[in-house]
Picture 1: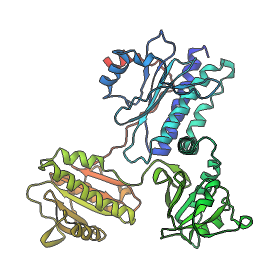
Picture 2: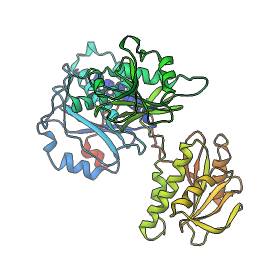
Picture 3: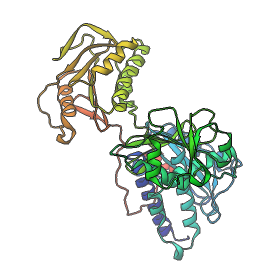
Picture 4: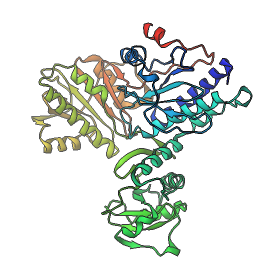
Length: 479
């Protein structure tokens, strides 16, 4: 592809498709690329949403102060054939996921996206970036008349393929290249079963997929005759069988095509794919390592547990001493939040960072409960189920529960968010040194301080279709 305008058009389609696809998979996501078309040319950066801002010193050190990145690859095998791509060393920048490669048509490219704090595994996202790099090399390798502009559509819908590619790569490493498991049918079955109810109940329990050759090593509690094994693509039948293992340590075992039987869960093969159904959602795992979650008929990167990064930063900036007490308070609040998430109820936690806790209307305690004591923390989790808020002090004690948060109406209220959220906005607007964590029934967790929600979601500006020429990295760093 010798026409620079067509080359930029290809990059735009890939950039847009990659960003939209990753945003569906992981939540709002930004994308950036650093690239060099030919070795003798300058290195350029395309970062319209400022994903790489803050990494300027490291990028200068890697790309401008050194030429090591121009050296040959580290022995990795090329992939892709037409428009072949040879992977290069990952940069491992904090807070970012990256993948880069070299090809005959594009001397160097390094793709970036953000490392969300609640991601199960970076593997599928890395495979996604790898495919974007390969598609860009392929498009540039094609002559102008062969360019179709379909690469962006491919990347937009790449979630299942990214999960499959990562699982295949991992299984190849663990058990070799001659695996018999067909991953696409397994992923189809997992999503199909996850959407199938039985007498109104969503699926629960674990379905374990193993290599057919490993089946005779298992000690089954019961198994099915080869001619009568239920087909895994019969989602309704598989869903019914899950009732035999729900709320237990038993596992339903499949060879990827049929359900073989039921095992106690001990002595399972070292390389296995596990679908852990938990009602309306579930997790896909390799052995015990989460790969991704699944819900609403598709795969997602989320662990479905709030990481509360913003809260941790607020506590670290507080006057609480020593730092070990900050960690204990943060851990206690996380425990309460995750308990509410796991049991599907909403709650509100008022974290009072004042030296002397403020007075809040509600159920007070004759003696505050020390949350460093496990039994008191468990009791506090139970109190969180009651209407009203928990009042937790900087002293690591629970000072009250079923608290009523009142306050005057403020401009930042959102009627779509409910009473917990808006009451927290009002209360923090009128009280200093107060942070409120709101856990909603449908799982979103909000951190509120000073009448504002502290949002860690990235700010995404629309990518311009005017396709301006990206600046050189040197000019970009200098501003």
